[in-house]
Image 1 (cartoon, rainbow, N blue to C red):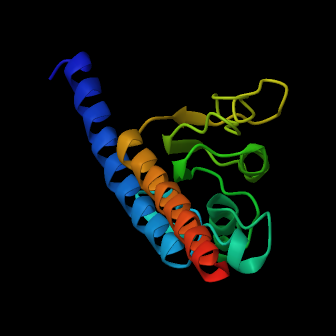
Image 2 (cartoon, rainbow, N blue to C red):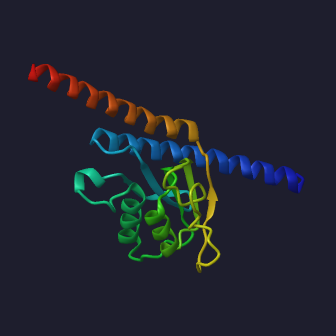
Length: 178
């Protein structure tokens, strides 16, 4: 087999793995949504094995740092008994914010794979790019847009439903006040 065919097959295999892991992250996001959280899920993979998972818990825990990525990184650190998570890939349904991107750099995560861009706070290329900033002593390889449409729709549907619920509540309060 020629080198170019081998490379294409290898890239196709990696893309298939990325999609499979992203679907697992989306399932974690659904768990967050069941708890009234913004549906974002994350998982950390080493040697093709999931070693840690996380999903948003900021609302439940009253903790601004309880993002999916942070929960996942914390769990992985406890598991491997080290804050450095070398040779790992973090999958997350939404582009990380600056806090999460900074934690990934400090943890020395090797690769980031995310679904939907975050055009308001994304720190892996949309608003800023902390994970590939050459001023830092570590940069991550980034693959963006894996199942982007599905990840984005999961978030959009959540916020649509939430707006409808708030509108219905306002209407009910208005009726009750009459």
